[in-house]
Length: 108
Image 1 (cartoon, one colour):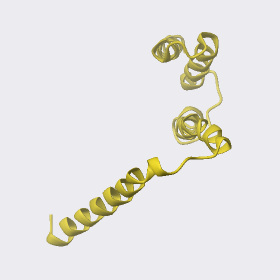
Image 2 (tube, rainbow, N blue to C red; image 1 turned 180 degrees about the vertical axis):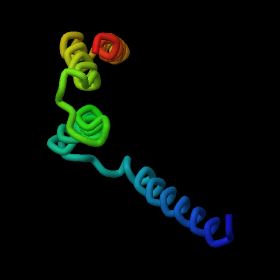
Image 3 (tube, rainbow, N blue to C red; image 1 turned 180 degrees about the horizontal axis):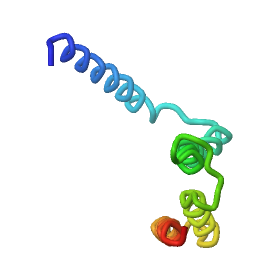
């Protein structure tokens, strides 16, 4: 690595650390409105959906809505397992989705 790259990485690390440190240092002095807290509850599922949906529907880089796409059926099984189990165990839902995914790949 060159000196410029090291300086750039150090600067990026410092900016990232300082932004997060400042916000965490003053976080206990502020309270969020209940509406915002309720809205933030849905951020992790929304982000996870935004990351996974393209991988499920576009596994080879193009739309694949056929019966050969095991990703769709594995994802649907994981969602169904999560709905049926009512958030009691995340690992069981993931395991159910993976089991359906692998069985679907064996069949098709």
